[in-house]
Amino acid sequence: MDLIRDLKIQVNTYYDSLIEFLPKLLIALVVCFVLMVIIKTIRTRSINFIKNKADDKLLVNFANSIFRIVNSTIVILLFLYIIGLGSVASSILGAAGISAFIIGFALKDIGENFLAGIIMAFDRPFKLYDVIRTGDIEGSIVSMTLRDTHIKTSDGKDVYIPNGQLIKNPLYNYTKDGFMRMNFTIGVDYSSNIDKVRSIILNTVKTIPGVLTEEKLPSCYVKNLNTNSIDLEIYIWIGTYVKEFSGMEIKSMAQSKCIENLTKANIGIPTNIMELKNYDAALKMANQ
Image (cartoon, rainbow, N blue to C red; front, side, top):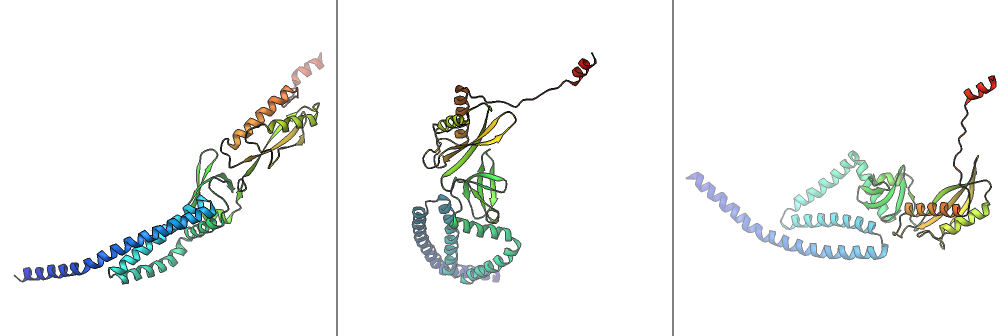
C-alpha cells in the first residue's frame, strides 16, 4: 500500500509540474514563432538589399548561410529562457565560448577557412562563374560555403578549395572585368608578305562571333623566326558575360577561319621538315 501511495504522490507531482510547465511551453512556442517570422522578414529584406546593392549571388548565398545560423541560435536560446531553462542556455553559451576557444586550437584550419570565407564574401575577389586560377587549379566559380569554394574545371572536374588557401596564395581572376584574352600561333612561309598575312588574319578574326572589335581590338605580331617558318602570334579578346559561345569554341573558329583564308590567298603554311640520311647507302656509293 505504501508503494501505491508513493506512486500516486509521484504521479500527482509530475502532473502538477506538467500543468505548471504547459503555459510556459505554449508562451515559448508562440513567442518563438513570432520571432521566427520577424527574423525571416528581416533576413529576406536584408538579403534583397544586399542583392540589389552587390548584384553578386555568391555574396548573397554566403550571407544567407550566416544569417540562418545566427537566427537559429537566437531562437533556440530564447526558447530555453522562456521555459525556465535559462541556466541551461547560459551554460550552453559558456560552453560554446570555451569550446570555441579549445576547438580553435585543435581545428585551426577550419576556423581559418571560415574567416577567409567571410573576408572573401565581402571583399569579393571573384563572382559567380568567374574564371580563376590558384596554384595549378583553374576553373569557374560554382559556389562558396563557410569552409570552401567550389570550382568547376574546363575538363569537368569539381574541385573544392579551402577558403584559407585562396586567401594565402596568389589568385588570378581572368574574367573580373568581363574580358578575357586568348592567343594562338600560325606559321607561314618566309616568302610570304607579312603585312598581307597580318591584314588577312586581323580581318578574319574580327568576323568571328564572340571576338571583341571595339572595347578590345585583336592584334597580330611576329613571334619567332624558325628554320622553315615565320610564327605569328594572334591575340583576341572575348566577353566573358556572353554565354553564346565558350572561349575554346571562339578560339577554334578563329584558328580554322584564319587557316582557310590564308590558304585561299595562296599563303604557304609549312610543316616541320625532317631530313633522313642513309649512311649505309652513302658508304656504298663512296666505295664504288
